[in-house]
Amino acid sequence: MTDLEQYEQLFDENPIEGSSPLRLIIESNDVAALHSYIKKYPDRVFIPTEMIVDSPFCNATADETLDVLRVLLDLVDTNGEQIRPVRPDDYSLLDIACGAAQLNTVKFLLDRSPPLGARYVSDSHGGHALLSAASSLRCDLSYKADLGPDGQKIWLRDETARSEEIIYMLLDRGASILDAVRPYRFPHVEQDEKPTDYIETALGQAVSRASYQLVSRLITEGADVHARQYSWSSDPISDVGEVTALHIACGYWNVQGIKALLDNCGEVSPTDMVSMRDAGGRIPLHWAAQNICFDDYYLPDDEIGSQICDTLELLIQTNPKTINAQGKDGATPLFSAIEGHADCGGTKHFERMVQLLCEKGADASIRDITGQNVLHILAVRTIGCQPVNPSILDLLVAHGAKVNDADLEGNTPLHHMARSLRQMNLMRRLIHHGANVNVTNNKGETPLHRAMAALPLARQNRDGTPDAFTPERRTKAHDEVLEILQGAGCRMDEPNIEGKTPYQLLEETRASWRKRDDMEERRK
Image 1 (cartoon, helix red, strand yellow):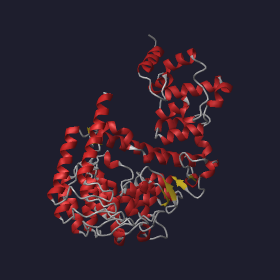
Image 2 (cartoon, one colour; image 1 turned 135 degrees about the horizontal axis):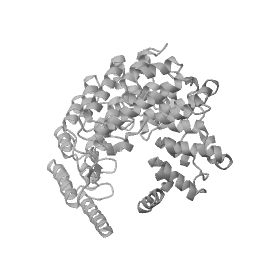
Image 3 (cartoon, one colour; image 1 turned 90 degrees about the horizontal axis):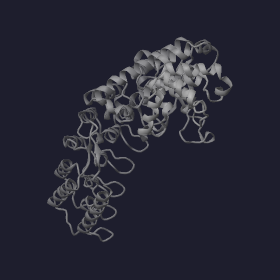
Image 4 (cartoon, helix red, strand yellow; image 1 turned 180 degrees about the horizontal axis):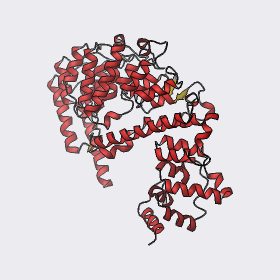
């Protein structure tokens, strides 16, 4: 069997969407197999694609399979007219290499004849490459979950080092930071629908994880520390405009980057700088308290805890008056901490940051524009999480949180917490602090009514193992919730506005569970 036939057989045995024998050859950097493929399928190599990143040139660039990339680029010289329409220009390849932090590929492309580096002084492409390299610092650790916390830590360290070296290389070869600014490109939105006043900058991208030295170098080169930009994320708090580089640095808990920004703040004082608000009215302390990069799901708990607390300490020390600042939604940094980290369950970093904020003066009695306080947020965010230490609830109550505050829908924290099959200890503690077990919301529901719609949510542990409810475990947990509420005085015969009692809802819920279990059993 030839090398090419081995790749074809491998693909036939495990056909993955978006892959192909050619893609496997490129990933393996197998020059001999590539030559065989080109000889056997000359019309399949350089096929025009809708997406430039799907071309073999771009695949080899992103994978840093340089031997294969050299072969592909050399083919341009002998088959130029045939290949050129589907061959990305060097600038596009360089952007891809920079965005993937592929240091050796960047060096290769810069030193090609004619070298790209020589053209940087006279055009703006260097700025585009800078922006791509800077964006690689905002890499998503979820793609490396298989490495485990220690492996991800090593990978992130190496990725950051490569990204920084690329940025220094581009700057040293004449790339201008002034060109490293472009209108923000909204995903899946037509060009004419995009706002023209939203931008993204190299400094805003790099400051996520860049060192003090690199952030300072970018500012020295002319980067605008206070430029307002757009920051996109799957997390709502960071999918917003009017963001500064400081907001982003705080969202990634990059203490060294924050210090560099504060040390180079120009005519704006550090006190005012940490008080600047994004389009949602949130200051950098909100971003530091929130979890926008999701690193705390992947990196070691103690390390994340230190990064977060060091960031919070620095910001509060710079301006202590920001501790209870409210965004347009009425949420304080304490809200953000619970919103962003409560679903991490019983992790130490969650406990540490809440403790720190409370020690620094966080007022847990504050309510947002929906009438909710931090106990509502805690109850909602922990519904499907591993058990949370009840001392968190004790701490919040001690700093002013009211256990019987009702939101605009009439729900108290206990109404929300009653839906969880994992937080029974929190529920007991809430009742211990005086939660009214028979209070009704706008629908006439007591917490016991809400408990009948309990959510048996599956979850994933920090080590990646699944944690789902078996039918037996689910029923046992549900029985425990009902026992807690009934033991505290909840009545099973209290009708809601629709006239349904908790007992009737219990029958409906258990019937729906049995029906779903039967359907799943038939699928097996």
